[in-house]
Length: 472
Ligand SMILES: Cc1cc2nc3c(=O)[nH]c(=O)nc-3n(C[C@H](O)[C@H](O)[C@H](O)COP(=O)(O)OP(=O)(O)OC[C@H]3O[C@@H](n4cnc5c(N)ncnc54)[C@H](O)[C@@H]3O)c2cc1C
Image 1 (spheres, rainbow, N blue to C red):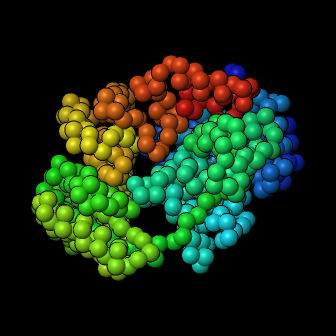
Image 2: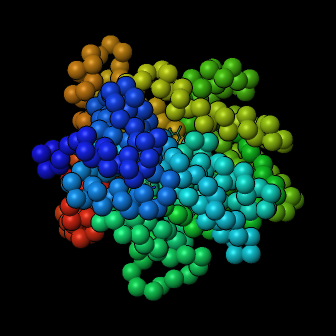
Image 3: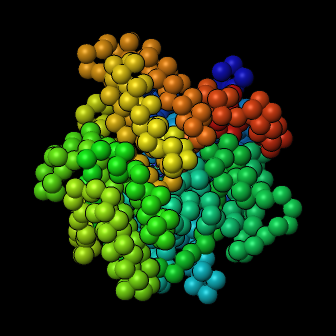
């Protein structure tokens, strides 16, 4: 901490000169509370900034970063604060730089299938604007109703459609950013191909706010699929359900848009909460499929293939949504899971491991053993199509808070080690932030980590840009 200086009244005065008095938030911890955490549960990972700035232009951001370097004050870029790794939490205090005011869609360029947006655009708003152009941004996560596009890029977010369309980074062809030393820079642009030197756009994607503040984002768009069908299949147990995933792709010869899964605890708790009428009670697992495309008949054929394969492979029941309302209803069951688990017990840890898809069943078995070892429940849901599992250890209500704080790092260590041993890794989409940085050596060599540190040192010699994230 003593590497950094405090935000003094003089600094606040300078910040107000830069952003105007309404662009600077100070005061007691109450007014800054909202900026002290993201969606990671518990107070362990929270820390309030000393001041929040809400710039509305690039020039303001450049001035803020130069000031921060001069005074050696840390700066943490912040989007909507929906992150699940503590990435936007200013762990050394200092300045929280919120991009919430920079929320304009600057251009939808239909001829080039590109959108150019400011960092604070809510992801769903971009999608809504693209609708009338017959286009869409395929890389978005399932928090799209509230997260910002800059947060998606900084985390390289994935989501429910990643199996067919890939993750956010695949659709980012250019970035304008303010570097940690305060230079305004554009990398890439409206071009689908670019091998001119090192791929610095890719370096920035997933950099978790540690290598610069994104001020403009170039998003590659796709023609919007005209039709979609959602299917919900119930199975006796996870093993039967997950065994079907590769069969759909190999025997069915199709890549669905989505293959999501929920285990028994997630399924029962969510359906109960939503007063669902699907026959979930005898079921031990759920798979949710979606297929989309331009040709209605092809989409129907794909849906029929999935339905038949589910039935041939012991699905207890398959529901096919024919209307948008029904599709939304099925997706609501999946999207509600994290909120329902939070209601069951806010003392929890929503995880994000990823394993090769064929290892999902053995990983689920290992999660059960880890749960038994520590006497806690570890419900699991996520993206079966790409092996991204949201295992979520919940505090046992019979354990004390201190006991939970003590065993949680051990539980996480066991889960991460098991993922690594299965050929996977500790985060598929939520990032490392400061929540998972202590576990990086489980999945990365010292040389790899040192390589990342060297890049950070060169670009941010004063270590003011979101310090303490990904690695110390
Ligand atoms: C219910 C729920 C569902 C979710 N589903 C998914 C999902 O399906 N897939 C998925 O990947 N994630 C998911 N998430 C996690 C989260 O929504 C994503 O990580 C999202 O991309 C974060 O965006 P944000 O704007 O909230 O970023 P924040 O949480 O504010 O910040 C995240 C990181 O981005 C950096 N950052 C923010 N703005 C900038 C900028 N302008 N320049 C540089 N760095 C910046 C921050 O410093 C921080 O490191 C979910 C979260 C919730 C609560």
